[in-house]
Amino acid sequence: MRRSEVLAEESIVCLQKALNHLREIWELIGIPEDQRLQRTEVVKKHIKDLLDMMIAEEESLKERLIKSISICQKELNTLCSELHVEPFQEEGETTILQLEKDLRTQVELMRKQKKERKQELKLLQEQDQELCEILCMPHYDIDSTSVPSLEELSQFRQHVATMRETKASRREEFVNIKRQIILCMEELDHTPDTSFERDVVCEDEDAFCLSLENIATLQKLLRQLEMRKSQNEAVCEGLRAQIRELWDRLQIPAEEREAVATVMTGSKAKVRKALQLEVDRLEELKMQNMKKVIEAIRVELAQYWDQCFYSQEQRQAFAPYYAEDYTENLLQLHDAEIVRLRNYYEVHKELFEGVQKWEESWRLFLEFERKASDPSRFTNRGGNLLKEEKQRAKLQKTLPKLEEELKAQIEMWEQEHSKAFVVNGQKFMEYVMEQWEMHRLEKERAKQERQLKNKKQTETEMLYGSAPRTPNKRRGLAPNTPGKVRKLNTTTMSNATANSSIRPVFGGTVYRSPVSRLPPSGSKPVITSTCSGKKTPRAGRHGANKENLELNGSILSARTFKGFQI
Image (cartoon, rainbow, N blue to C red; front, side, top):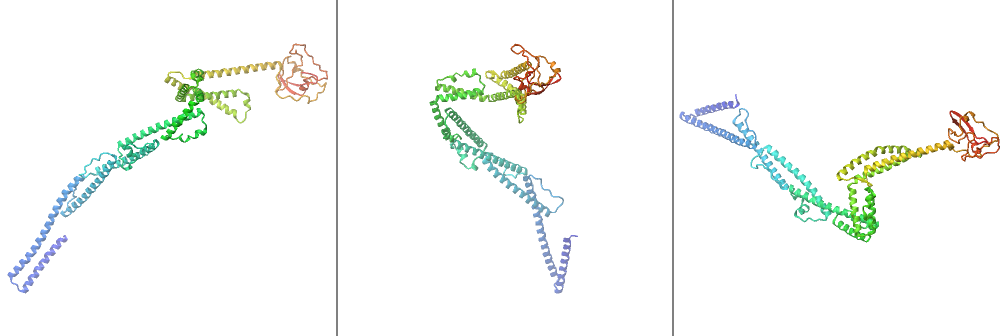
């Protein structure tokens, strides 16, 4: 049993006791029955009125709860629809009071969510408006009267974040371009003369509209200023080149050049003006020193002719080079020719440098070839011979490769220009082949000369004997004893002919057979005596040598004898 039911029964018991107590009191007092009845009716009426009043109050409470439930349900449905959430559903059986409480709590929660969404929407709209004004972009399209859904708020937040990134990137680009524009204006001594330029340079950076149109206009302005700056730099650099050229041609001293060194850098308007003044001054000097200038140009022309591998015919084709009437017209012709040659060289510089590289490699190769045929190279020290051989072998490999590369480049050049590429008046590959052929013929000629020289030397040795290869002992140092004769090996000598010569194994004096032979003049044979005590002119020299000779497999021991000539 519920406690409320127990209390109700206790209330009935209390009421019963109270009525009994009243009857007892009325009995003791002696109140008549009709008055007792009246008094009981009054008690009944009081109790009934009290209970009716209490019941009415509770009924009113119930009505209020039911009404509140109805109102909350309606509001909750509206909020769920606005917030784009599922309608609230009460779980299971519940009392009116609990239902009203749950509905009221849910309504308060939904109201809070609605308020927060509206506040966030307002904040995002304010940020979007600010960003759109700076970036000059349209506002984000969203209904501000309705409550945004969570997805709509998320998309709006993402849009605002993207706008912030766009603003940051455009601002960075704007600041960078502005800095470059200011530098260019300072370099050009340019003051802002349009409202847009003044807005860029003079106004606050935060107040500048970062629209795509303004950014594009900024970029265009920067390009224009950079183009003017580049043109100004090119003009200044051209003036400097002209000044240096005139300095060299006029042979201006270093002290005078230092006076204008301050304007040899930079490209501001005042620098350009100073450079132009210097050029005008030098041009005037040039007119006054016509001959010196033309001769300087001719030196430069000769250098370009060498660099472009001009033949003698091509050089002679420029007739003003040989003229001696130094006039302004002649100077203009030389200036035009030097400009043409300079441009011609710059256009084909890579090709000319390749030919020059081949020329240098070819000269180095010929030098190594010359050293390779020099017998004295074997007396070197420090490993130079090995280094030279390695470089020579390397050149033998790289030269053909370089020739193939140049051949491909020249063929492409000839196809492009529809004319032959000549070196010293000759096609380059023909020139290369001619150089190789000349080298081959030179080697063949040198080989034939060596063979002829060796042949003559052999014939001379066969006829007169070879020259001593080791130094002879000094004459007269060894005593000569008359009559002491060392016998010759008769076996060996018999095998030798009258005109044969015996070459020592280790080099030295050649000793001839004792058989008499005709002198070169064709006179009578000279008979040498073996018993004379006098010494012949060659006796002293031959008597100082002792040699072991090898001939036809036999060893001949030979010595000069006093008074006998071998």
